[in-house]
Length: 264
Image 1 (tube, rainbow, N blue to C red):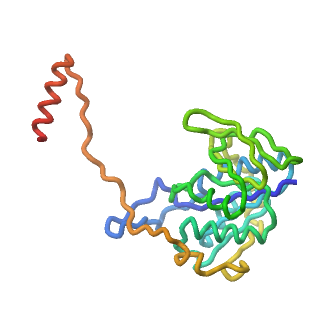
Image 2 (cartoon, helix red, strand yellow):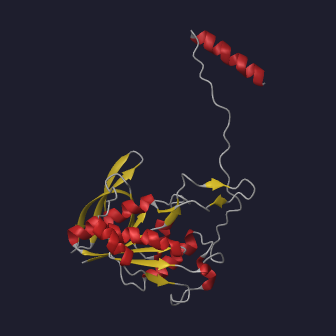
Image 3 (cartoon, rainbow, N blue to C red):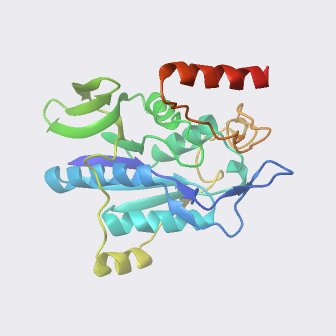
């Protein structure tokens, strides 16, 4: 039976986030937090594998106490257990520190055949987490997975169709394997009322920096994060362009030269 780990993240609804013009930081107050949409696609892919081959799906996230809500959404969708990594010592973590904590905590949960991630998070959008986790789990990696084609439990391998810039490719990888999933074929399911009510009562396992054995305090949170973001700011919006379409190419060129002359 498969043992599957899905790494998820709770993010602010980016459609409602604003930036403080003075500090350059995100204004999160009053902005609802949601389960990262790309992680929902990864979760759906994992649950479909469980339904077809059997097994267990565990969801894990690192964040404040309110991130528990994202995990309950995962349980409602079909995950079997959920783990929250929450501690002030984890604050200000970049992807390097976050992947270290997640991998360290996951070792307490057992061995995982497959690890699923969304391709990126809406708030950071670095796309770095999956590769760092694959390295820490000593796992092969299949990125940009559009469809899982075959699972061979005897050979302990998985075959998938990946999306490339100029088409697709069929690729096979050995377990343990980490996959990042595209949304094309894995639209998140809508839980029914019974599943939703059950998720409200489900137990969520919690770990802190003190309950994860061997965690190096210099590799977590701000001390373990070499990436620093001094300022965040929205892109500058320039003047709107003007389409030149005169009666003839000659007149269009003449108009263009006139505009250039005014600028120069």
